[in-house]
Length: 211
Image (tube, rainbow, N blue to C red; front, side):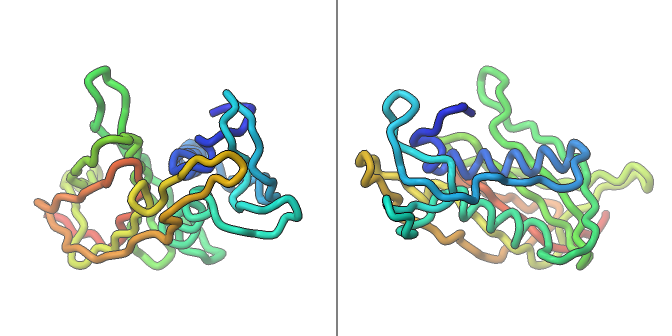
């Protein structure tokens, strides 16, 4: 995104970037990502005099934690909801999306894992700041030459612009609301439609069945 920090990093965009980076890295063959910026730093004027920081936590000049940034909650969604927080192998599978804007830019990126508990879990990032999008989910099984779909209850965890909104105020900038992710349950199936709110990270997690 940038070698200099700014408001983009502490706004929801920073959270979308983190989820997209981890999903792309693992799907590309990486075995484990590392995130250096656990070290908190106060807000400072940087790129285009925009106030921000690279870390996950908002701290004062004495490094007392005051609040959380979008990347903090995005990291929770990735490590606690998308993947299973256990020391066990997750199988990563490629996933494609056809949600694009008029210029052909990909608006929704998606990543899939089969977790140790047997559930399938999708990480979907809607990068469109202005619009929600709806998607259908198909698990293509070329070996058996059939399609599969989420079946029964599907857990839905979302963190986006509705859960985190940054309010600029120089060194006193803050988010409100400031998390947490929203959780709900929906019913899967071949005709199920899943909503992705604007500027959001969504995890869909459940069992699959074929037709």
